[in-house]
Image (cartoon, rainbow, N blue to C red; front, side, top):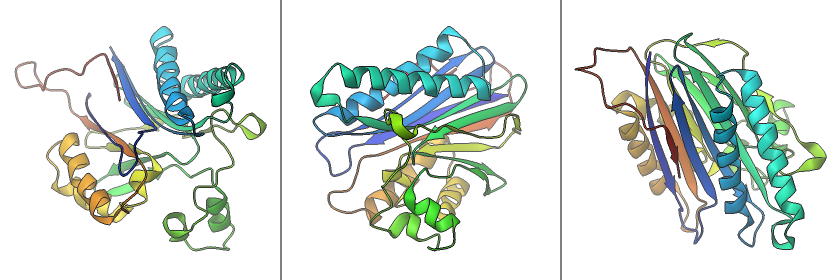
Length: 262
């Protein structure tokens, strides 16, 4: 199996982009991560960039595209942010969400994990077959039946999280299926809340049907974000992964770079 990856990160209506994205590839697999920082005084962008750097480094040092490796990488990022909080008063409140995807192209499996409300979607045959669930107060109220699903995008309280990297009192990692089989044609989307707030799942699927590449898919959805967003809207970032059948060298796209960040 062969993967195509594309990354988008836009500051939106903010002066500082507190989102960070990255991916790393090796023989047999690829790791992708999107992180959204918070904390003020520059802490958000420090936290998100630190999370991406630590997570990718963990996989570089111990290449294993498994749920256990995803969990270990997120735990390492959490510890790194907590350690840096203690070393600087201006960064003491910094936090970050993160979603990590690890794809094993040899065994054709995927593993993922997340903390916060940065999401992962997996599309197959034009529909969502897997999706992360936000670590948010509104998500809990939706699950309990007190609010409808629309509140996840419309509620003024939707950004209240109960788990984040750097939040030591209630640190929670949620992992996807330990062994999720992937097939040719699957498409993954990792995105911050500033992105999915303005592009619902049906719009994602429609954009996917019209797209000719992962970069094209992101460009189409970015237009929806810009059209639907507020004047001072949040930063928005997304990373797209397409699973294709490996083809002969003469027909294959250029190989992915070993590491990418943004």
